[in-house]
Length: 67
Image 1: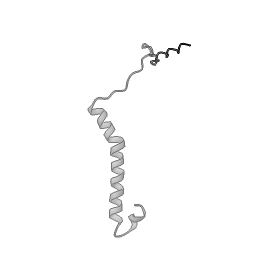
Image 2: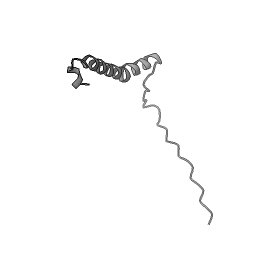
Image 3: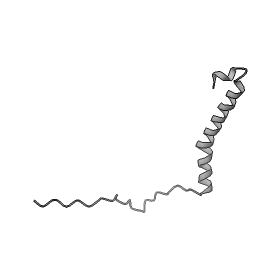
């Protein structure tokens, strides 16, 4: 799109497409996630030193085959 922006015929279309791509990128990466967080009241989980960290679940060992 950049080389076309200096063209007399295609220049306005190239600038419009480039601006649309930039605007859509900003909306997708910044505005919409922020809007989602505000709308659904998303909060960051608080890490507390008082709560013990749970051990990951360990599956029980398989019984060994009788010899």
